[in-house]
Image (cartoon, rainbow, N blue to C red; front, top):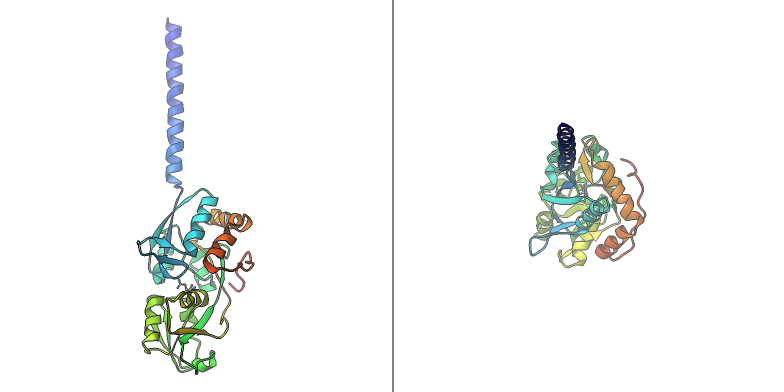
Length: 265
Ligand code: GLN
């Protein structure tokens, strides 16, 4: 009888241990959450925008969801103004940011970037009837609109005697350009050309070829535990054709080859 009781005690004890191990594992996976909080500023057509129903859509949104799916994560997007994105990442308030963010040496000092996921560049935009502004030279001494904290804003600072007006987002400064308050805007070419071609920016045109060659990356806080897995996701969707499919869907053309790391940054 005593022996049977002892056996029972042992069984209950080992069962208890098993339950403890399983629940420990569960709480481990709960703290290593599979949900990635990703910041974006949905004012950058066609990369991130809010549709009529108030839902996020765009190239970056599809891309981020595809990357997450490839590495079995889920994404929770958080809307944030572009200008505050880098400091929010620095404060580790979000896990990552995707918002057409150009990989630059300055930004690299405070955040980390994934491998490049989009080849981009800056362009000059003027009113459709403007014949005087053709290039950087003819921009000298003009009123130029830029988005605060953008690579376009940095570029504008290098133009002699330019009078720079800063705005919070693209739609604002294009309106000012249309109203005649500024002579030109310097902004991301792809986003601007897309908006003009899709009738969202009537009365404007892009002049000259690209002013710069830039690459967008997904930004994370420095030494983020998520960066490796994000890079694995990008590699997967580049290899399995998903990247190409999303690119074609938004830009109606074949994507260019992407370098594994951004040149000059
Ligand atoms: N690519 C530009 C930058 O990083 C602008 C991006 C944006 O407006 N969302 O500064």
